[in-house]
Length: 245
Image (cartoon, rainbow, N blue to C red; front, side, top):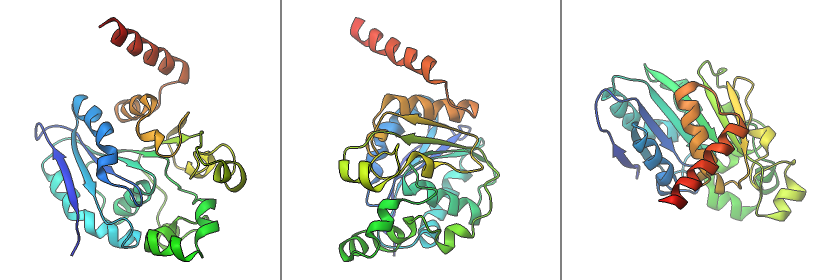
């Protein structure tokens, strides 16, 4: 039995919908600020909490499949995915095995598509294996069987990578630079990606950074990210409006 839980908001059956997937050892609550932004932008949302440390990716995909299918059935528009960290890998596995009929775009935030050298270093450490479970062992740079078997993505993927870190040991001595303290910018990339951008934030900081919010919306709406300078002007304008109000 799974302990799958969901935060679900759907304003109209004709809305485009977004499935939000958190990363390993995280919770759907961490994606709540981003979810609220997406709801205010007019999207229906399904923010799932799943047992990220208990099962490998293929079994996790089977766990979330019914909830995603039910959510998609209530939409007349496309169903998008917005993911953080390992949630992006889970989305890739789910789409490969149970692709929604009206699949839209996928935004991956800090997703280790090429694996993480940090997982390489820790994979044989008992504490890491016990805490992060089978999915944690799939995050290494040597491709796991499940991920290696995935077909090339033929849908639009936008990748947001962080280039700031809080842990100096991982950031300076374990991971290639630039990185977010957990994943390098290069490892986030996919050959099939439609676009990518970087944000000055750490791995978890990506979830709260205003640029992440704006770039996520930009890609969902247009299939590409905003150039950095216009985005910076938008952020400054927002700060000015708030100061004046």
